Length: 197
Image (cartoon, rainbow, N blue to C red; front, side, top):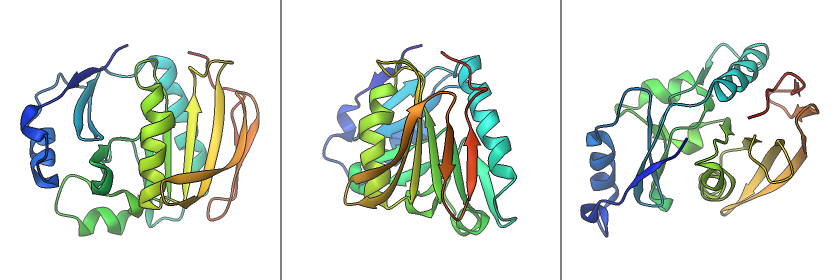
C-alpha cells in the first residue's frame, strides 16, 4: 500500500480555504483516503483487511462506553488549520452536536474526544509524527496510535495531556496488552485479538 502525494503548486502560500478547496476537488478512486498533511494533499489507497478488522474491534469496544450524544466516525474530516492539516482519522469520537453545528464536510479537530489512527505501511510516519503533533496542537484529549508497522513489532500507544504540539505517553505496549482508556471512557481496551499486518 502506498500513498500518492500530490503537491499542488497552487497550494503553496495560499490560505486555508484554498487548501480545503483543492482537497475537496481532488479526484481520487472510491475508497481512497484524501488528506491534507502539512499543506500537501495526499491520497492513500483503501486500507487492508487487518486494518479494517482492528478499526471494527476498537469501535465495538467504544460503543459500550460512550454517551448517546457522542458518535464514532470512521470518515470524519478533522481540521487543524494552524498546521495546514485536514486529517481523516481511522476513528474519531466526537459529540454529535459538533457535526450538526458545522456546515462543511469536516469539523475542527478539537471537537474530538478521542482520535484513533491505525498505521499502514505507507502512512506510518504521518500517524506517528505529523498527525500526532497536529492533534496535540488542536488539543484533542486522547490520541490512540495503533502501529502495526512499528520497527520492533506491532505496538499500541495512548497519548494524552496535550501541550502545544506535544503529547504525554499515557500507556505503551505491544499488541495483546490491555490499554486503559481514562475517563470519560473508563475502558480497558483488549488488544489480544488485533491481527498483525
